[in-house]
Amino acid sequence: MAERGRPRAFDRTQALQQAMLLFWEKGFQGTAMSELTAAMGINAPSLYACFGSKETLYREAMALYEAGDGAELAAAIAAAPTVRDAIEIYLMRSAALFSRPGKPAGCMVVLSVVHAAGTSEEAGRALRDARAEMQGVLETRLRAAVSSGELPGGDPAAIAAFYCTVQQGMSIRARDGATRSELEAVAQGAMLAWDGLTRARA
Image 1 (cartoon, rainbow, N blue to C red):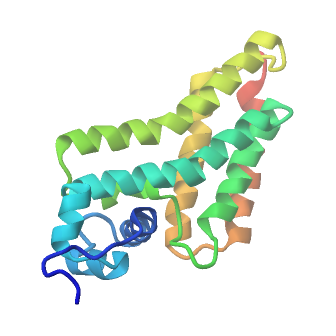
Image 2: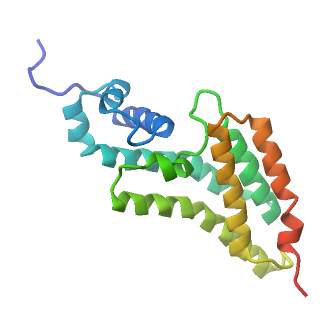
């Protein structure tokens, strides 16, 4: 006979994965505790004992997302043979990630602009930093290309901001039902601006 009051054993990593998917789909406020416990396979006391609070669980779920899709994008940018390839890969890979069957549409980090409603000011700052991180990755690659002479000109900060804004818009479009091919068309259109953005100024 099981010992009374003993918490049910569970796989923490798997439970966090399920929480991430729920938060990604429904946001912080939109996800009920009953939905979390059902998806994670634990009861509320076990959830609080393991994660501390719903907000802490949300932030851990966001970190798990960043360690997956976010890290994949950053690695693809770093590995691209040219800076133009890096930007195109960033957008095209985003189109694929945002529209995968079996996963919530869009980017969890981008969607946190609205999905994190109800979290603390501290969490809000952390999420803003997370959204800015990818722009920093792009800007670093662009600055290196300017320094090496690969890029003839352009403002790395402005170029990074432009392509991050495009990618964030793609995330919203994906959540509204845009297909991968439709998102790729947006990405390809944005790449048409590349020559103008990087042209040397007289």
